[in-house]
Length: 253
Ligand code: PEP
Image (cartoon, rainbow, N blue to C red; front, side, top):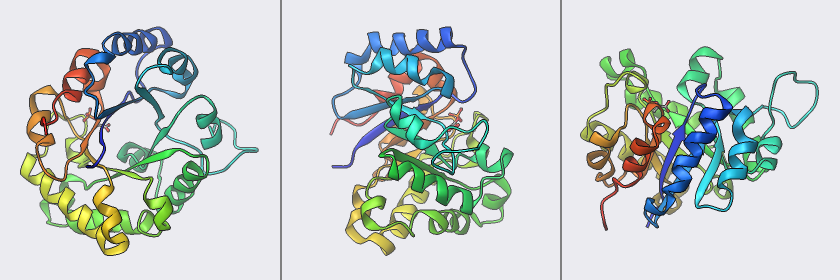
């Protein structure tokens, strides 16, 4: 059975005190996280060390929201995958639409980042997803296929087997507008088909998360879909109550 994951992308939110309080709330209720669900929190870089101190003995895992394209050196302001790993992270989000849109992160950059992540032993959560006009002009499958082919399908099978994919339609991120469970399932099945063309049966094990205004009220329906293995959660991961409720939204079997 595929791994079930809920990953909380805190984005550029919370002071260190607020972030630690949020981590503490999750920690205190971590026994509520179902056994087969992996919970990941991805706070800002400045919080990683402190949050790791809080959660490292628990079943909550730590992730970062980004990593540098290079291993080390004169890259002022950047944070390497190795540094991220050294503060206790196991996951790193790569290719989030906000990074693509506001920081010009395209395939060349994302290829470097995913390689850095993998060589530092981090699990990349690689994001794909179309913009509204691309869906409206019926190009959403092409867009997502290209995003996968530029980065993921050129990995070797061993590296690929470590990757988590997140399908995040850009029009649903932070907008309150969620893809319907049918739209999400259709795209997740398509993603798995593209991956299977390159990696065969390995793709059956790849967790594919949905992201985009996922909240307690829609998570149950989304997570009931056969190819949706969890969520990458933005806004709702900033409230422990909501994030835990989402983690408890998987079907029982
Ligand atoms: C995200 O940023 O990855 C995300 C899915 O955000 P939100 O849940 O707020 O739409």
